[in-house]
Image 1 (tube, one colour):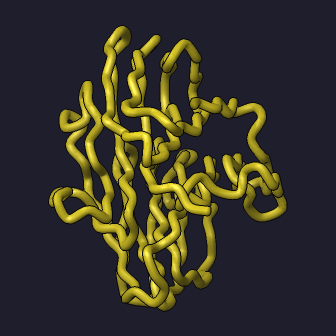
Image 2: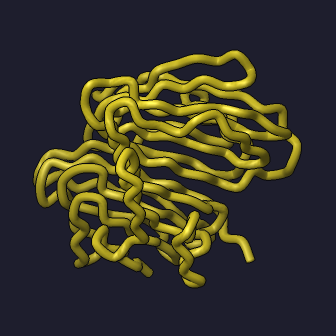
Length: 235
């Protein structure tokens, strides 16, 4: 089962400094049919103006992943962490028992990013934050694990949940497969380009909810950059 969710049909809010699209119910956007996908709770597609950002605010008991598409985001938190994550790279904040943070675009151009929230495996984890660059060659023509709650994914940023965040870069005409398994769910978003999957076309910034598939096979109709989250189902 593949449910394509076109970018134009996502929830939308424009605050001037922030132009946001919502794949799932968030803030003032509410869609009872799009509350979550497995343990994936939030996928926001944010465009942040130069100098704009989120002032210091609290979070708890959520795994928050930021994938930067263009530009960069600068993070500060109550643990004393300060860092800048730029295009193609990822940061993970495990909010755990509680953390306060800010996120600002300190660049001269717009920053475009995906903000992804995944439910943790339990409440009360020790809060943490991390970021790292991922060599672009590591995901050429294949899915690379960017963040994971699985110990075997040693090079990935750590998540406190049974989930993986994956990235892939494809040249036009390339086909790749990912062994999902019918007991798992996936949510795929095209960060750049265009792909076809099981006879369906996804354009840039479209999403697809995927279930009941042994493997996910897709072909790039144009050079493409993909981000996908794999999670277990929940009631």
